[in-house]
Image 1 (cartoon, rainbow, N blue to C red):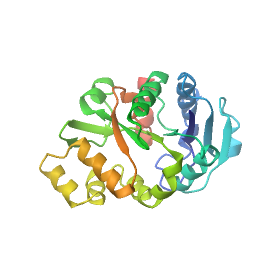
Image 2: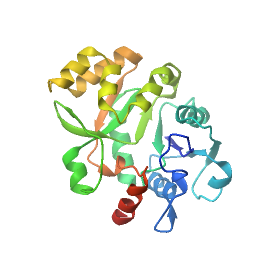
Image 3: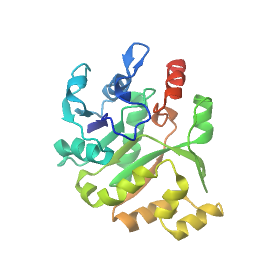
Image 4: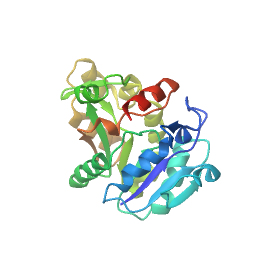
Length: 239
């Protein structure tokens, strides 16, 4: 399976050029690349970003020039692998990521047969590993979860996803807006504490016309991103 790391800087970034922030003498993106290389399921790694800066980074198979828009960068990154059965997309700001976490997510995603899989992590698991982490959490019937920073996707469905996916990305840290996007029933069930993961999966299939699955990951490393100045101190501490 091939992987795409989105490392382009956009105007929405709170931490400019975060892929090249140095953490203990190493670029942040290098930690992500090393984790991918430690998962035997990964073949090629494409990175979307500044070509000149990315020349400094080892382990990249394909450099894709960035745009100033996150969704456009994702589309550009997938283009070389558009005929693949599945591809994984990651952000460049998850330096705690491990090869074990990547392989576990891919294995569970493959078993679903879904077009799109997204990891979610239990709050208690996250706080046990990273007690200082500040994350956005959402409560569903199965527990309280935060989202990950990796997607498993069928490139063939990407075109139909683009319009709504832009909204999902914009609202990914705003559970209320994300709930409204998914519909009144979903929002109501969320408010009364009866929303389940299967409700969301069925709604995703209805709205997007694809099979989507949430993967409960036991690896908090997959979801703790470093996208603010204050996160850098935490990253150095845990690394």
